Length: 215
Picture 1 (cartoon, rainbow, N blue to C red):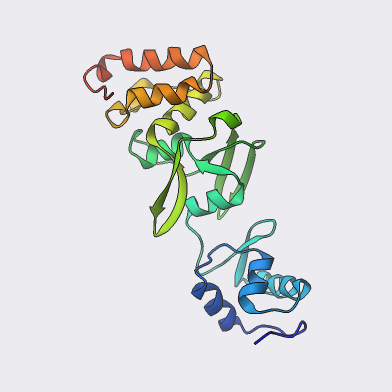
Picture 2 (cartoon, rainbow, N blue to C red):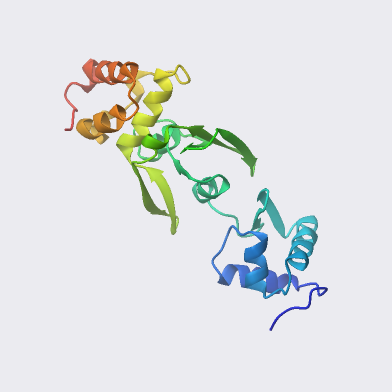
């Protein structure tokens, strides 16, 4: 049944309906549709009320989540700024290519760079050329499909930042046994930067990696 425009929606109903819809991130329009609210203004008013009560939190302008049912960090990274896919050191850590645990989430985008702070976590978006915006896949992580770079593309994206002087490279920390060199070179060539090719050649020339090359 449709709700009247002035009616305040029961808290339990809000939680139940949003969870049943399996929508951990939602817009005002999503909220209006799922709760059966007649007009957009009433949906906004209800969201504002629940923001004040703490039932709902704002992820970014126009994007919200239930406090007791937050999205995963990877899901949030995909939705905060689109189009984007998780890459760079975040994806490298996820695949175990670098040993560090990365607490911020870094993604690639074809749009201008951007940063958000949500749930005390920094979400960074690094711009790459549209012709290089590829090499990612949809993986089911925590039962949610997220867009994340393939291992070779994540490394190519990261080394591109190294070539630009925006990241430092410690050769010993990269496990190339999980990287297919030919695939890495294909992705690297898309950037059309000679410095990037030099970095990759130097990386594979390190004694540690001479016996672990996968083509």
